[in-house]
Length: 457
Ligand SMILES: [Zn+2]
Image (tube, rainbow, N blue to C red; front, side):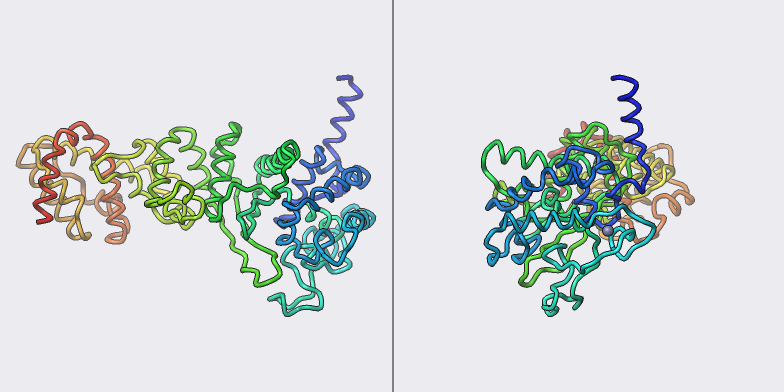
């Protein structure tokens, strides 16, 4: 590369913000469109000019007029859009004119403006839902819950939104709009969108937006995120990408309310970690969240308890433990989850580990398998405390290093919220006991089965 070329590249990277037509807005529809444009034109969005953009308008119109895509466009831009309206005879010409008119209205962003997305350019005319999904229906205000005729989007933001179909993920009747503040993740998604089109062109089979037959928005979001993490080695746990999925349809009749799913950063960090460290165990845990699947493809629509709990800030601790007294994963993975997602402090985890180890040693030394059974089947906070007391007494009788824990540890580390989270504490202890005594428990398998049978009688 010559010095002049290097200089040119450098200066093009350092364009001042007011030299760019496209600016990220935080509006998920516009931002997704901007990333789709970048991938579609194969050029950094910050350097694209109206004359660059003009060059590939006819290709995008051709694509949108193909059956598979047109069907999706119906639910993205309604049946009244330039691409779908049955009363328009020459859709190609009118669609290209629509894009052309938007390009003519392009201006560089200023310091203020009425556009609700960028806020840096004025927005006239008002855009309706056949141009921007979920805005308004013009005079037919009864179709739109907000009863507004439309929304204020400038020509540049409106142009960007026209590329939304390249970025959307189809769930059949609905679409999943993926949004993140992390540039690299948005760029990976946008590239996937272009790959989808290239595949369709190569196969001469136009099936529309990206999709894998998922119908469940939560499952699809995890599928997208986990897929992205697996394929991209340069994504790190500390990324904090703040990921949100907007599930929507702009279909004219009875469109459902938009569903918004936020994936907490802590869950993202955990997903990166667990997939890199031990994806086999992670898949086992996720599969438990589905319960029984009757058909192979059921996981694409059936609710998953593990995913749901992660999205709602509820615990998945119980999913690490198996009924046959084994664990999925190991203490390292388990405690990463406790620390990162459950926000447990290191000291509490250390105390629980030590108490778990002591109980495991006690059971092994005294062969008191009944005590373990009692721990597993404890019905209340009081019941659990009672078991601890019995174990402590047993430890003293057998000359073991008692007590099980100090009063301070009991109050601050075992039950910091009193009776509220006693099950969580019990399950963490069980994880540790099962992991530490796996050989012993295997040996005693028959005895445990006997205890269980007797109890059931
Ligand atoms: Zn704008």
